[in-house]
Length: 330
Ligand SMILES: [Zn+2]
Image 1 (cartoon, rainbow, N blue to C red):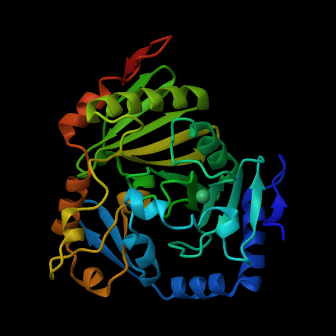
Image 2: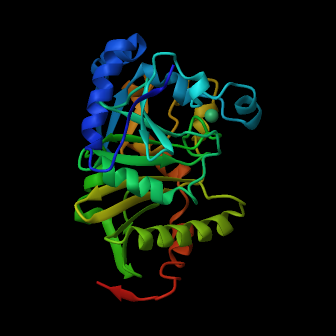
């Protein structure tokens, strides 16, 4: 039976199609209907870390947060994003013949989507920046779209995918000026560094998606060489389209999970940060963590899983290294 609910055609409203998909899937896929009820019962707690952070107690995310991500475990399990292994009732919107837009069966927000490539190929951003920007544009103004690197929160690092959640769900989407540091314009891309956030956060904005893609690739190449890795640096990227402006919020990471995640005693903190968590919305599948985590714990986790300010300086030195180099500070 076909996995395709409908095909996205240019001129259609993609957010409208996604709403219809959710309505249909909740009616015909009991597991999703239950998960949406579970989401409505999650609890939220705001924590002041010097910046805003929310904790969401969401027991349904235990499988995702606890997923074994070592190469052997990945090799030995059926890929849950491949169409052949998806739940029988699951359907999706075919997007530009390349991606299938699906309802996320363990939602963190209402309308949470998983957007999977139709082929089983590794999670790698280098060749997928334009699809990420196109998705953000086609899902605007309702959704932002994000990418979790294969070593930074993706629970299927072997299958290229994005996720989408309602816009303005994450505190980092609306940072007050005091958290926005040094800014400059480089080859038609405005680049802003986040400050006082305990995270290595960079915001890039442009009306020219191709220029944005080039600048992201430049920063990624620098981060790759500094980290001494082959493919891509550890990162999370959130894409948002605001009228004509494409915006990327990038987190450069040093590791996926904090050391406390692997502790076997009471010190264990079951937090497994991806884009949503880095964006200021931390998922705590366990009640214990939800109750006890305080501002200092969160700040420590953020610092531990982010590259150091010094390393971020070095990554940002690569800005503007492009044909047609131009630099204007303001
Ligand atoms: Zn797959």
